[in-house]
Image 1 (cartoon, helix red, strand yellow):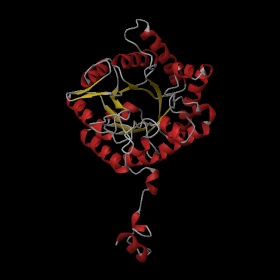
Image 2 (tube, helix red, strand yellow):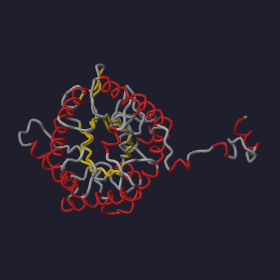
Image 3 (cartoon, one colour):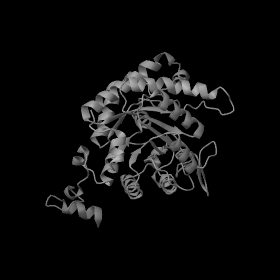
Image 4 (cartoon, helix red, strand yellow):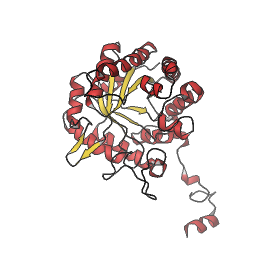
Amino acid sequence: MANKGLLERLNSGEKVVVAEGYVFNFERRCYMQAGPFVPTVVLDRPDLVKQLHEEFVHSGSDVVQAFTYYAHREKLKLINQLVDLESLNRKALRIARKCADETGTLMAGDICNTNVYDNSNPNSKEIVKAIFKEQVEWAVEEGADYIVGETFGTLDEAMIALETIKEFGRGVPAVITMAVFIYAEGGATSTDHVEITEVMKRLEAAGSDVVGLNCMAGPETIIPVMETIKKSGVKVPLAALPVTYRTTVEEPTMVHLTDPKTGKRAFPDNLDCLASSRDDIFDFGRKCDELGIPYIGLCCGNSPHYTRALCESIGRSPPATKFSPKMDLHCVFGTGPNTDINTRKVFLE
């Protein structure tokens, strides 16, 4: 098991790197379906889930985040597999706990946007809270070190998630991250039209141990919002976990991105042509370091090579650094005695 908890690490000035992004990773590997995005791979191929956890730790993640994103009852109902709700969640949590124990990392439970919250429905809060409650209880029963509540568009739903973790989480820390969909010249807001720094302050006041942003925005568009949050006076540690796509001011989230060749919407299955480079991720990590953002990671689009680049950007050398590029040994582009001079001329002259 990890020798220090999340808050102990953050309060002592350490950074915590968190690999998210399991949904898109398994969709790319053809074990999940884009659209519903329900993580049935946990039941179908638990060996692959374990393997990806291990690969992310190998690449430097300090946390094994249980693959329970979109594993709530509304999603299972959508694909007519509600009967598998508890078994899928517990299986994912046990896989994560075992990997964390074997690697000395932290294990995080995970709850997320339900897509059914409706502030015009007086019964909506109780419906959503019941969804969160069972997942939070399963997470603590299976030994989660802390619980992430992520990808909320509305402050209201994020507050329900936080309230549920505080009430049923048996004292484990809560990390709450928002997904920003609405950008304007004056800044960013939640989908229930609360300015983003006010969102963070309300979450902090309600007892969240870490607050920040995840998903939707890529490195280029998440950093300006994080700068604004940092300057706003929020006291708890901040989190930044962008998607690994080249979002811009004109197309600020991955759902806005268009294929530069066809002009069509790229989300979700043609985002490949807009993927971040490793240098993009390295630069993002450096900016987070300069801003003093201690809880950093990557969301949709993440892969072990990106997590390694993020870790190396803050001066770490995870086990995967052993296999970082060493181009001075390349047969054409290298500089050593084994460089093929004739082929080099063909390429470079």
